[in-house]
Amino acid sequence: MSGGALLTLAVASLASLFMAWAIGAGSSGSTPFAPAVGANAISVMRAGFLVGILGFAGAALQGANVSETVGTGLIQGVTLTPAAVVTVLAIAATLVAAGVFLGYPIATAFTVTGAVVGVGLALGGAPAWAAYYEIVGLWAAVPFVGGGVAFATARLLRSVDRDQLTVPALGALVGVVVANIRFDILGGDGGQSIAESIAGLGEFGSAGVGLATVGLGLLVALVLRWDVGKHPIAGMRHFLVAMGGLVAFSAGGSQVGLAVGPLIPLLGDSIPLSMVLVGGGLGLLVGSWTGAPRMIKAIAQDYSSLGPRRSIAALIPSFVLAQTAVLLGVPVSFNEIVVSAIMGSGLAVEGREGVSAAKMGYTVLAWVGSLVLAIVVGYGGFRLVSLLF
Image (tube, rainbow, N blue to C red; front, side):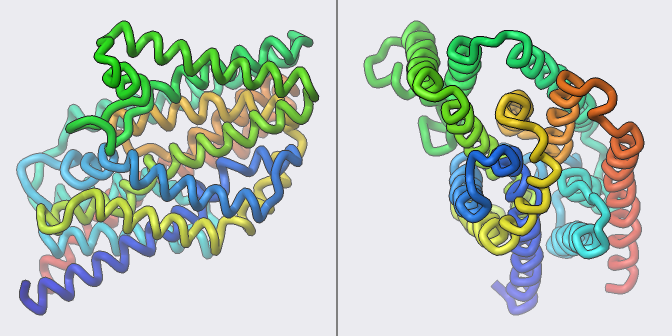
């Protein structure tokens, strides 16, 4: 590898690591456990430690799908050149850093996606319309699905005064989802789920997958039934911490692709994707341990009025939506997922008074603005780079 190529790789890798650090210190590091901290279910420092470990695990075990979409699935007809990769990462990292230091809610997923599309179009590529339809469809569905499920769950937990039944039932649904999460290290290409791995041990086929799924769901329900029966509030707090852990794991699998995905065209087959994901996961880990505790403490104040029930109602759809995005390989804004769920549970408990329409409109405008700004700056920035060099 020539000296110029090594320099390009070093610059791109540093920008990628900075992105991973910013993501770990920001939404993926602070959001998952903030409701649990606000509900006094876990301390700030312990939450910061756990979110780093679980985010790293999610990145290493589930980060391939989103990384490949960001790296090769957003533009057709061209492969991002080394200069294009550096431009994408530099623009995305700069915009994210500007948002952090200036206090503007720059959405990382929208920013990275827009930068890749803008630079790819400037490079002469064609829009990947099929991928855009899928991505925009999920982005548009998140507020309605996440908010709607959170609303229904919060109403259920509020109206049915039998936590020993409702909480285990919700836990069983979460267990069913966990049983069918796909892990890159299990099975062959595309990974394999826990239920498929268990069924494969006995060669039971699809029936075995179903039995393993139901078995894990029942196991979670029984554990929660015992825990909530012993002490209802403590049991719900334990469930809330577990949900925070699952959301943190899912955030790692979803968000690491935003940091390392643009590197894939530059690295090719020279470095295995699994090693790239581990590197990105370490960036998330360092970001979470150095920056997340302060963010968790700040955000938890906003969530202190939620309580265990409303927080559980918000984190269940957040977990399911994040895993859906990982499965489809769609880069998604974690803030969009969690904020939408929080608003849905707020409507169920407090009505319209629990949701600020002005704040909601400002947040949506910031999300859309992040995407448009990144596309424009990506296109113009790469054209400028092409003229100068």
